[in-house]
Image (tube, rainbow, N blue to C red; front, side, top):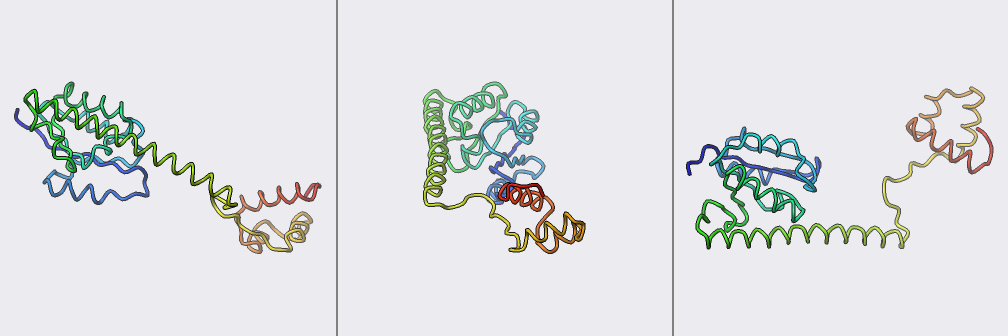
Length: 206
């Protein structure tokens, strides 16, 4: 089967993560930059814009590179199903850079296909299990932190000790909103949150 086009698929789980390592791998394979599709979002499903665009572009005989099987996704069944769609329905080859055994160009005979399918099942299961383990460790870590009294999330922005006096001046129009924000060094949203908390603590309107 003649290869009509060579493509690369790159995915990181969030916008904060860096895709440079995967991009470098694609460059070493001499894949044209225009043929490298990059998604910056979770692998929980295949509803990703770059991935969907790539699938629509693929034609029978094309080749798709991914650096590792978990770049395709993290769910065992989804990875298996998508692999089948790409190789059987779209008629493309897939090569996993970090796992040379997962290269459909090398396994056209019955035994080779069996071995590749077996490796795919094992690696898909491992990717799925690792994700579950990470999620479990995160939940346990959060629970442990709460037991130890560690406050999670964004730190609470403090207000001055004379916040009650400043509020009174603001209510009496002795201070403008901008002035009280500057004195407290807080945003408008934080000011209204602290004001509401102050009112609840004092049990009166303000």
